[in-house]
Length: 147
Image (cartoon, rainbow, N blue to C red; front, side):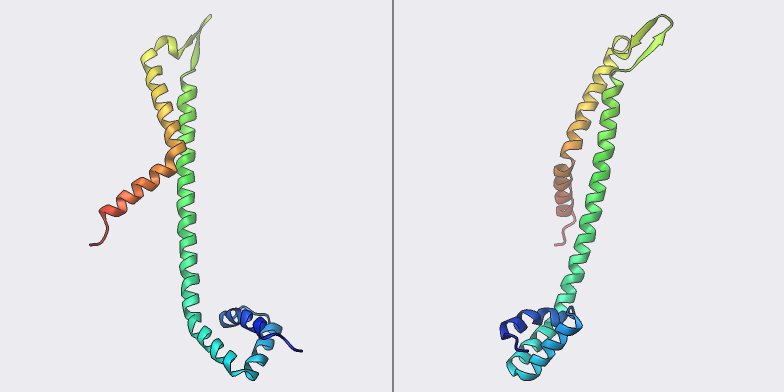
């Protein structure tokens, strides 16, 4: 079976990483046995395979950090939204006094005003938590940056 040299060259990085199937690996090895320049190229790629492994490990670590950061941000955002909903609905609280209904707004207008302010602040924080998180983490890194 005749395979174009360019196809073998395309397969060499996968060969060096050990990611080829048995048949593809055998095909590449057959071509390497015939062509000295391909062997030289495969050897150079093989020496770089350690770098590929390090890069893959680093990429996996970065993915873990990104996932952890995203999970933490989603937890913070969910908590803020829950608190904002609670504060917003608390404004409309009421209770029954025998034959009448008393609303929190009627009995405690200052408390309702403060609840409204807190609710608005919580909604703003919930929607801008990712931007604020980035600013704070950048500032935090600047404080502890190695000199």
